[in-house]
Length: 253
Image 1 (tube, one colour):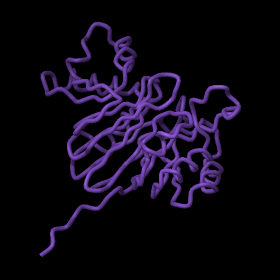
Image 2 (cartoon, helix red, strand yellow):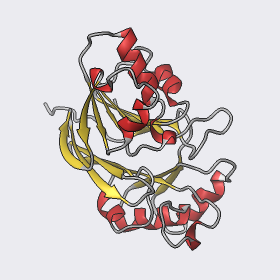
Image 3 (cartoon, helix red, strand yellow):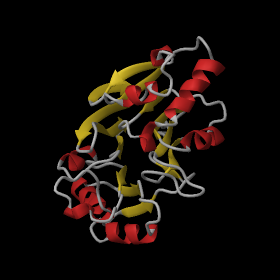
């Protein structure tokens, strides 16, 4: 099995029945989580009831991307005391945010922290974390294995690095906040759905998944705007949506 499951798709705060940013990646049994925003942990446990994950990658410290990492921390701390440390890849600031919730316990008792941006071998993947413009340090994530690439922007303003991040990706997950007045801001830290389509086209990605929708936005309109610039498949991230990102090689003979 090689697939991505959407745990949450909202930016800032969750809409009813939804969650904020989060994705679960299953690659032939290797379990990786990309972001754990508000309300994503229960959805993760619905898919993986044992809560067993091999690594977590957090793009940045904003709580709509990382707050449920605290719940996973408590599961490990109290439910599996003395268990192996969980590899956690994240930019500066993430542990500081979580530490404010748990000041009396060392988060390193559960997490083996590896800083982003950077390059790592992570299970079957080559992980590349690129620094992208946002209000706080944010790392766009690229995962490559067996000739397949999966890319995720986290939160970002427009930057040529998006074309590098998503180059020829099988699936490029890009935030499409579409917040009112965004394109008129003197400093850009978020994207529109139209811009997400433009950067996916420049990257030559095969498929585009829009995410981080501002609560109340018309998601069909966002997909339509992205399709004006991007000729490949455009998906809207929907909670529990599962997308195949590669096929397992079958030995010949």
